[in-house]
Image (tube, rainbow, N blue to C red; front, top):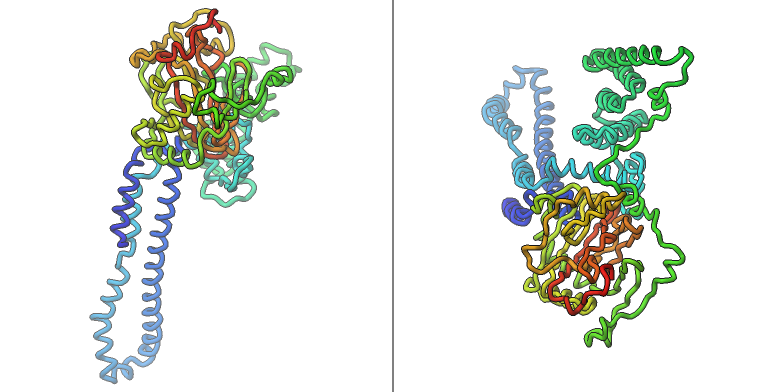
Length: 560
């Protein structure tokens, strides 16, 4: 295929990836692998062309060197031969012009043209920032120190990859630009450590120390900020900002000492600032999620409240959908994951062929997953939901209708009023922080207490009825299909009661979001943990109240 045809074909293939936010979907990031491979091939062709050109120039230079060595030793004697005289004139008039054309020949055209076309589909600054923040999210959630991430020592990883000084410096800069001095310190320290160990890099220690000293100062650690700044100045005495900062730090420290002198005796104990210097550690700042610690602990497999007593109440059985004719001969294997609220897992719900078909249908339609703003009801992207999703209709392919019908048979609920099949692929550190699947309406003011209930109140007190426009009532139940195994991370956790459910390809989990009374079961607040290693694909079906009034009738109490 001619190069220009390859470029046109490639541009058509990649057109749908424009503005794709690659970091939010590992599935779409795989296309970048092939794009980079194509660039490498194009670069190698350019190198071969350059080498061929240089080979011709080198050959000409060697020939001319031998000839001029001979001619300059006896110019008149050399030119006495008429053929030599003719060839000298010809060389200077014609041959050297041809060499000039060869030297000026542009062999970069093919490579530059390919690179220019593909560049419009490259990840953006937003992608690089998102990818860096994803690594920091994994670092925090799974308590990984920068050294572990930098050396690529991750559980279940098939391929090992390391971060260079430049990579660590880039991570620190991303955090710094975001006002995140906690991660700035961690990653600049790692960059400095690898630099001190002798790793070759274009990043200077001065650059690293410049960021690190200021980030440390932001934590109020004057002693260490001064120590780092002095080290910077010892490497570059002309660094104006460092000199100015050092003088400023010295003034602040002197002021602090004077205040301490007025407040305490001369022989006082070590100050708080000095203690921080000795520890060399800074606390991670609190954020908007009250249950952060519980959520992240569950993601690590810690704090799961599966007691022996509760374990005895969990069973495995064959499930025939309340004697559904389709399931009598081939019932599904059902396993209790939790007793109250009741969460079950079904095995062999989707075959590998069905999973691949669903992924094939969904991949071209993947778009950044959105959340509903609790105050406005408008769908928007959010940093606490990092994935891409698409919605599949039964008309898209028979396999979609088949999977929908199967979920109806298993649950005994109708899919006629259910939402379309949603397919999601999680990106780097892909997650969905604690949330409810059902609409909180009207809000129960009695939930203003502590912990998770407080989070519910703070985040959803002003939320409108999210599903009113559908006319199908609230989301009564969630059916979640796991379409891939995940090497590490990616669990579905329930912070309220301490459950963690791990993905298993081909299985599905099911739970009710509402009590039989129609009231929301606030215990079902759940989260999709960040994917540490692997590529997580899921699909889900949300069943609604309308059409299920007699399939799941009301109970006798509010919490039945």
